[in-house]
Amino acid sequence: MTTLVMRVSIWTFQQEPFQRYKPSNNIVLDAADLCLNLRGVGWSWSKGLKIARESRNTASRPKFLFTTFIHVPFYLTLFDLAHFIIVSFDPHNLGSPTGISIFDLSLPPIQRYFRSSLICFISGLAIYYAIQAFFLLACLLGVGVFRQSPALWPPLFHKPWFSTSLNQLWSSRWHQFFRDNFINFGGRPLYYLFGRFGAVLGAFLASAVLHWVGLWGMGNGTDFPRVGGFFLMMGVGTIIEHFFKSLTGHHVGGFFGWVWTMLWVLGWGNMLVDAWCTRGLIGSMFLPPGYRPAVIILRALQRWLNYSLGAA
Image 1 (tube, rainbow, N blue to C red):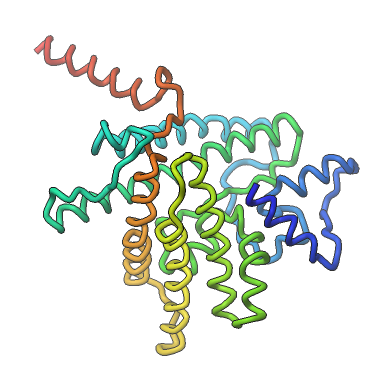
Image 2 (cartoon, one colour; image 1 turned 180 degrees about the horizontal axis):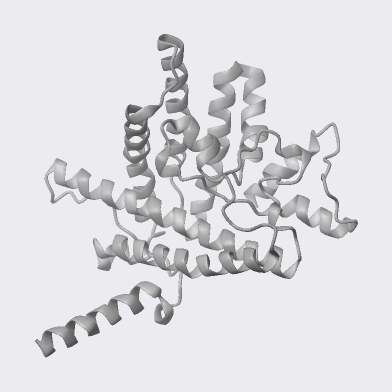
């Protein structure tokens, strides 16, 4: 709903009609694609969108669908394993919809923040795996059922773990689902008021609002200072990178750029993940208990170990 509000607001002030480069000759399908195609692939409003290189065979629909299909259970399994590991830090509380903080006050500061940062890191992996899995499911639906061209479903991510700056991470390596919303709903208005820095903070403010509202779905309230604060600090970090370039003449990059990016995201990510955990998001049931890949794998591994130890 929040995404729809943003898009409708943007369309209200659009001065030129959007153009689809290869219309389907069906106004209903074109309208549906306009509403559901979040990245704007194949549309005139996706200017500047950066897409990762495609590794699937887009010239053959069957091969494209097969490659996509086999990756769905792969990412679902990785997501479930990551979620299982997160909950295992405190099964009684993190696995409950009531939630608990990732900061264990019974531990000394170093161990406490190492534990919370590890949970934060694994949570980031879980988000990546989950988005990939559901994107690929949507891809199967679009290409396999509605007969869309495979070229309209390019890769969603571009190896975000290799990001050497915050600008690179959020502008090209992370998914660009809401890029147009954030730029035109948040960035453009503040650009007219405060210039380039206003545009950067405005885009991240729109992201902050989207994720802040999203947490309300748990029914435990929300937490803008920590949820929204994370995304606003990504904007602050991006502005810091601009000042670095202005002072040194060099873009943030290389090994030290990678270290900077990982530390900034992981450091501020602690408060984001803590907000999720205290609101019970991590305790949600994402997959049916009897069909969780992580549980099936671990039970099979336990049976194998019991058999091996018994045979020995």
